[in-house]
Image (cartoon, rainbow over all chains, first blue to last red):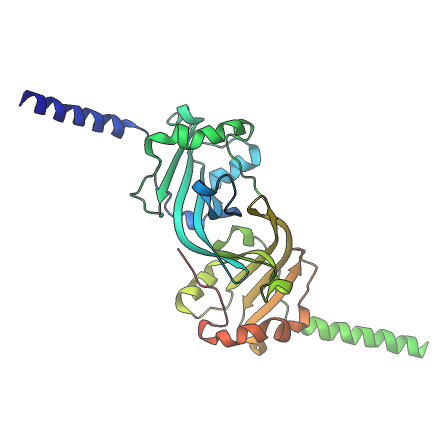
Length: 158
Length: 158
């Protein structure tokens, strides 16, 4: 009985610890934000496993400020919206949504990962968090060399 | 001298006739409009000659109303923004802008082409009109079968 209670306490403590991780909010309404740019990643590309398909980047108003100055203010949000790329009849069209990737700037809340919170919502489902506590290894590790652009890869185009 | 004057008058008359054609305005600020969808058209596709590359569709607020009801109100504008598709390293990235295609709804002004004015701005240059008076053959001929969707091909997606 004592062991069972300790186990339960252990689970509770772990749950509390997880809940205390800073969480990236789902970016409601991002499909109305500014479309920054797009790209298709095809089989054979080194990022195909993680990001194969057609992706679109969207930025909220604060992220647009950031792109212009290379310093993104708190509240800036950049979306990496990844859809299946359907190759058929010498055309590539958009298929189902694979993931909605989010970078959310909050310098104090996400200090451990360059001031950015990283999250992925599998299939675009706000309840399906596919990054969670793994942001440092799953996301920031690749973004870290981009420090001069505040850890972003994309640039604004006309 | 008389001939010269008549020639000048002739040129003036032609200019007046051209100016009387209803003109589609350049869609200032369209890059901030709602991104509807995207597609890549590759070599071998029947539309490659005209529309090869990666294109993005954008819609202003009135066009969004139209997509939802299949009837586009006057003032609805849909953009077909065509960029070069650069194939390299198992990826497709965006190159230079080829043309900004515009459908601008004004039922009375453009009655001859389904209530839509069609124009293309070569290279995205507001002064480089590549459709002009040829909208009926160069654009509307292909859109005409789409009458049930008010002559549009695209549909809104999430």
